[in-house]
Image 1 (spheres, rainbow, N blue to C red):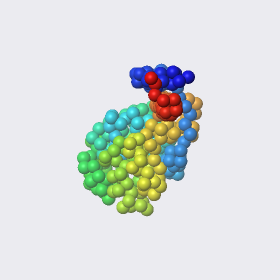
Image 2 (cartoon, rainbow, N blue to C red; image 1 turned 90 degrees about the vertical axis):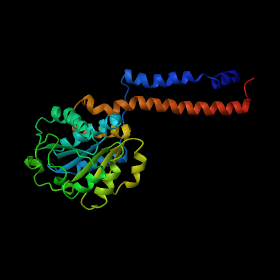
Image 3 (cartoon, rainbow, N blue to C red; image 1 turned 45 degrees about the vertical axis):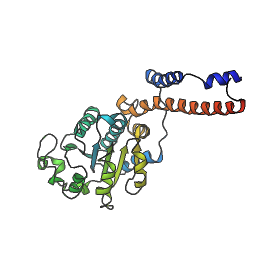
Image 4 (tube, rainbow, N blue to C red; image 1 turned 180 degrees about the vertical axis):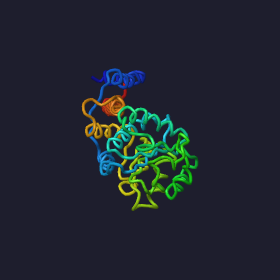
Length: 290
């Protein structure tokens, strides 16, 4: 037994690298997926959108770029699906220069194929990107037209039917922010929600590294939050169960699909940590190999 312990303790680390490769590759190749149990935060985001009435205006700020698309795109797609399924009026904008492309990608993936009755300018609009970071938030909280005179297509905002009667972000029933960092959730909380706590409600989806810094804002400034691909997978389960009959399209299972490799890799890491500590203590009892 002790010879086996000594051999395992001296195992070439490349075997561990190979195990990690297999732990990630096998779930991808065989599309291994696990059912997700929604946490309180995912349920809170879902409930916040559920409380809205058909026709209510919702601001969706997609503040991310392709570098964070792997984590954030699945939750963005499910948020658009949920809002459109509730027949809400969707006002898209972004504080990131490439944000409008992320918005268009979700329009192409979700709205056009699954909501053909949704009409641009009447049911949804892409207002695009404006430079200025948090300064943009400050301005549009009191006057949307001071910065957004046209949409991303160059159409005058006063000629867009769904923008008539909207003076500022305070007219929105909910802010939905999908954020990769700065500018993002923190800036929306500081300059939109905090100054107008009785008028503005907000939910968010963030990357894994950003999530711990946002928890202090829950539940007052943030009514709910989706954290990384795990939060996206949980939210997908909630939305798909409520609004999709039969098998969801792959775009609505991206979070769950990506959680497969991550879950197996995490289980392997836990196993390796337990094995390493066990071998360490056994060697302490037996003494080092000679």
